Image (tube, rainbow over all chains, first blue to last red; front, side, top):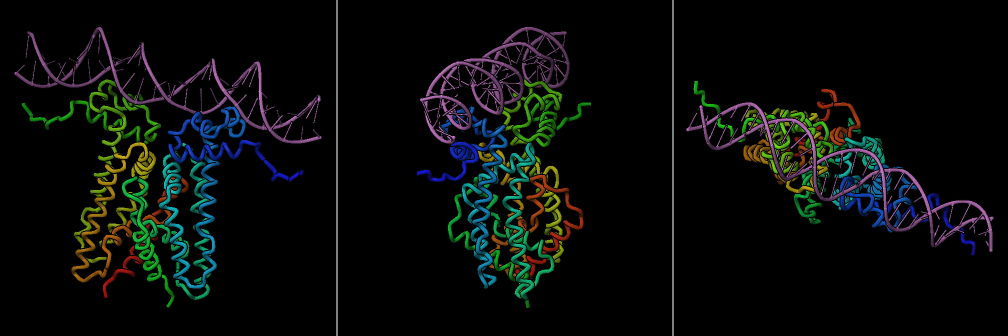
Length: 206
Length: 206
DNA sequence: AAAAAAGTGAACTGGTCAGTCTATATTTAC
DNA sequence: GTAAATATAGACTGACCAGTTCACTTTTTT
């Protein structure tokens, strides 16, 4: 029964630490989370946590990177699988918007923005593993459609920046600040359709 | 010489306290600013500060409200003075974008977003005195142009949300996270023109 | 089963900080 | 000129918290 356990690069409690940290950081924010809370939640000793991570900040960066990569991968997967441009954009917008409005998405955004002053590398890691990936994928999708003659875009880079902003349209800021209930599906559709309509109005070929 | 000093609603040192607080909060953020730093900067004793404000949080709210009102008043003034729609929108966009990218605008945004979890009323006060005012003014301007027949907008509320988002277009997030230099005037114009073009492409009458 | 690796718990250090208090001084109002 | 209001310095309290250390236990490897 020498089942070849996947190489455990970090010792038995690595996952516990990371899961506990994710739970507490997402609940209490960076400053609000105490390391003692995290080890309690993780069911792990403080010494163990500090044997994995040199300090609280790097632990948080690890958590944020994992969340971001997972979510941004999911958000843009199979956008390129669709032939119809409107349909592809609508799908992408749906995924993006849902993530923007999700509890995890909002909380990561709050913490990253709040801490980016004190710890600039947090901001960079987040940007690279989240928004930058979305931008790159969107950019290459748009370029492909331009080459195919389906879209007519002078400044593809700008267009790839505009589309995600349109998907936020007022909702995102209000949610980030905790000023409203999560939007209904109808509200999300209204924003998404508005975004796609406006985007295609400007950039449709012909 | 009984010069009728303007009614000092708050004692002689009120302004000193507020100015010192603004300086330190803008430099160090909310958590990063210690009350001792603030009284030192303000040239005032700790007891004096606490005679004006019951706690640090309310002091910060006062500072943030002042900044926001001043800035959002300036940002939308005289938008309605122009007859040409494109010109009016371009002017509004310029003001908004400049504020979004200014040191004060970025820092207020960072602090508010970071602290809105712990102190929800901070988020509300900020929203009411900033974004909500911009939205209201923009909304009424757009409605007026619709009534005049210059614009054709089904959902004026949505449109008034879309326009400010378009003015951010990638730049804002990068600036908030400290990932780039302030944009040049050319970069700002590129974003603004892109925003106005797209907006009018969708909503121009006729 | 023995050795090596990983984990434990709890106490401890050194530091920070919000908010209070007191006895004293200065400014303003009458 | 006197009383009331306002301001002062800074010590103090009580709490919190990141990160260390150490003697001890459990798990894994061989």
